[in-house]
Figure 1 (cartoon, rainbow, N blue to C red):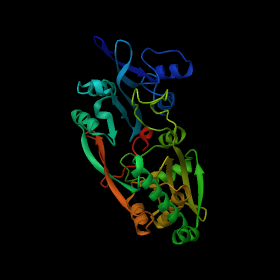
Figure 2 (tube, helix red, strand yellow):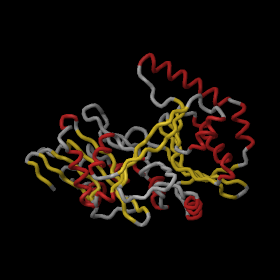
Figure 3 (cartoon, one colour):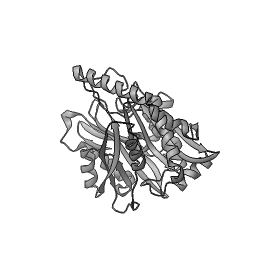
Figure 4 (tube, rainbow, N blue to C red):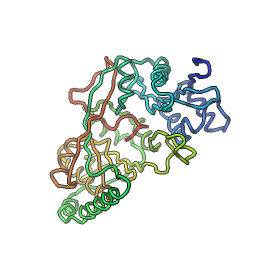
Length: 354
């Protein structure tokens, strides 16, 4: 702990978070304004967390009010324990004073900044990881439909327009015909068994971050919404992570003739349906893609996202959505971290599953 007079930087270990969650005993400076119980429970149940691991760092005033905080959690990648940083927040009145950098350095010194990773980083976190001596690359994400609904009269117009598009898409006889002619069978999973993981591992050669079975199961078992609090502008007692809408997340196994040909994790949240983890046998890709098309028609979300270029091309070719936008997402990694020749991002870190 570093003391700056009326301001101190404090870390909280997995053991302290568990104590706060399970026994209800108070921990100085730790409350739901820094981390919700939902999110804390997910972090302490991460398969690679040890009781002594600091998972949370916060800048506290003399009155123990948090003015900045960040969280981290580990993952085993290629036999090496790396750390993801997530949820960097600083009160507007204290920005420009270097507190985010101090916080991330505090945790980085615990684990080694050469073992820290950041995905889909905001410009502020990119600058911090540049300070760590990391590289930066950009990856593609494909978005279809309308993601944000503006307020007021324009918002009502957009809502009506997107609703009409959804209705027409769901009634499209050609798209329904594609689904009817497909031969796939779907099996929904709340966890990944060994046989399923064997299929995933076989088709994950191009992944930037090859996921272990334990990490994929953690993602499926601890879904929650990722957000940052706006203190003073919310009536939610737990504004961070414990929101009114949680993600619906399922693993989906695709079989054809009793043979497994694909697997993906699908996430449905508010207006957005997305596929972040997608593995398939190329000989059966249209069967797998058609099963995703059926989910799109069934859920009726106005927005769909994927990072798979072949799936994106398939949706465009079949005119499932009227338009597509390609976004560049950032990924920061240590100098010695080796990327595959054709890097593919499969959803980023688990608790920022966006």
